[in-house]
Length: 60
Length: 156
Image (tube, rainbow over all chains, first blue to last red; front, top):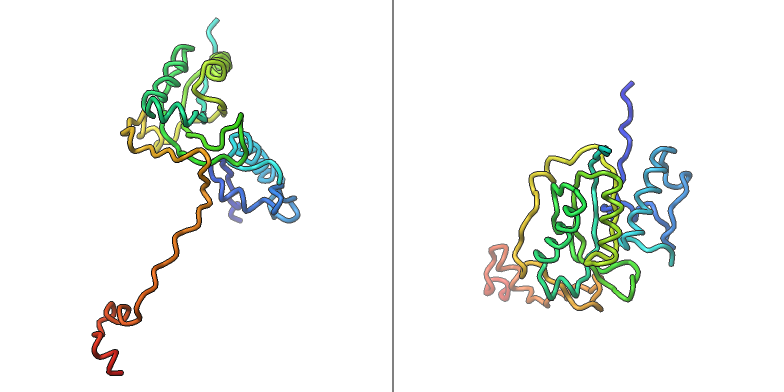
């Protein structure tokens, strides 16, 4: 069986990250994002990097 | 002691006021000199964009983002970061360890661009400007576009 390619998250892809954020700019839980544990960790890291560089807000 | 060198991706947030006064190339060269002073090899240093920040940092609303790909030791990165924060022109920077520099980035290198190519709007400008409304169009003009003459349209 072919291995499913895991998604990559980059802090520079602001629009791509916003898909996984709630209206209050909080990260969606894995249950709602549909990501596996590894991808969810990668998303968390990219989101925090984007927030540090003021590409995304912390909370509203 | 010989320290291990790694590849880093770096993003610098530059003061718009300084970029406006000195020009983008001069400010970018300032960052490059600071990095090289600490023994960092700068492979790529290019403009990533000028944009409104999601929140204010020290009263600033907008910043010029510069993306870099470097080869450095961990100590050199820390020292360069400290100097950039103290002396400027970067008021925030992020260094990330990477496996290798992508080929498309490496091809760009240290890209020189015309100072007038970097348009820096007013600090209070937002990126959420509404697009201008479309001008009202005469229905006959639309028909002209598809090959039916004005007269035929009026005749019905």
